[in-house]
Amino acid sequence: MANLELYELDGCPYCAKVVTKLEELGLDYESHKVPSSRAARDEVKAVSGQAGVPVLVDEDNGVEGMPESDDIVAYLEKTYGDGAA
Image (cartoon, rainbow, N blue to C red; front, side, top):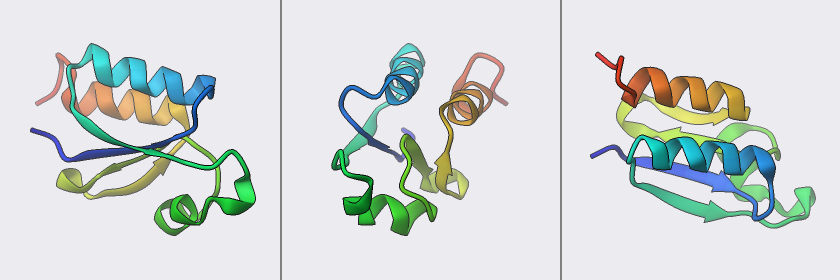
C-alpha cells in the first residue's frame, strides 16, 4: 500500500478536493492537520518550503512535498488511478 501523507487544514476546499480524490482511489494516507495560522506551519514549511496547504508526501515515489491541489489530484490519478502503469 502507498505510503502517503497529506498536510491539510480543516475547512480548506483545496484540501477537501485532494481528500476526495484519495478516497475515490481507495488510498490510505496519514493526515497531518496544520494550524490555521500560516506563521505556525513550521512542519509544512520544512516539508515543502512554503506554508500553503494541501501538501502531499509520497515517499515511495520520491515526492517530498508537492503543493497545489490540482497538481496533487493529477499526480494521484496518474500514479494510482485506472491508467496507472
